[in-house]
Figure 1 (cartoon, rainbow, N blue to C red):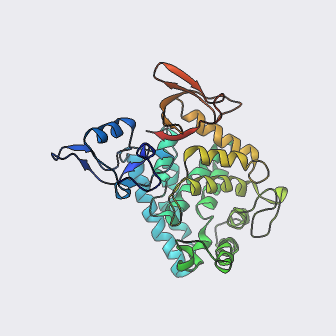
Figure 2: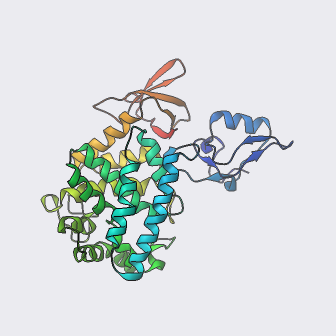
Figure 3: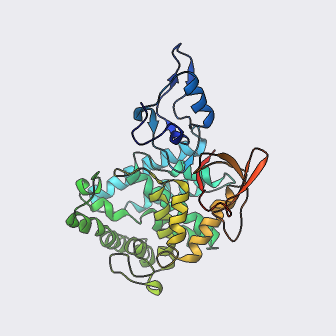
Length: 346
């Protein structure tokens, strides 16, 4: 039976959790394959049904197979996890180890000409959100730092601050941090305190600047004053904190977490675009969205209406509504307001 509330066509773009065979034992599709229309036709031809156990959660970027970059990032996340667990145990920052063993891996992850979707796919958290999120926000913030023209030393300071932005969560009780359901009001108050605790921890760490500590304090603040812990507004929020807020939100929305699955591609970028009106820094957010969309030219995509095509052009004025080639025809999404890019295929 199909997963309740999900048609067979709606499994397109999701990843298989196991190998699928026909009745004669012939392999039809291997585990980790991203389901396409061709798969659906083949499954129907062989009378094969999909259950919820056959489908693995996948975020807005579906990369087939493990790349060298993915394996490197997996190893870096394991090392970052070990060091952040040290923070939990000692209430101190192993700064020298982070600089020696993790920061260079972040720099390597964002180097070269590999398409952004490959990086984002590798950074996308599966069942290791707590640790991968630290590394991912460090990498994405470092990329943004490059794009806005930071000098190398300043970019390295940003990378370190972004890597440590959520370090205060290592001081939050694990039953609250990893709770699968909605937090109570009291639990949410405890969770929000990670910003202040992280700030205090970084502020007393030799080798870190006050500006870097501010990132831990301010990454949930919003320009319109709707954030926490203090509800400060525009000119009181540091530039590093503004960059990390964008990176933090993007990675959180594109990752599987204990209480929700990753959001579809178009929902993530449209939400971020909406948040430029009062919440996120508009210049940083628009630059981020434009860079992502332009990097996707030539990539295969799945649209929200089930059609598959290739992005051939991105409109500078409306980057979230690109021109898509489907077979021999073209679809201008700026003229089809109800259709969006749902997922990117590697």
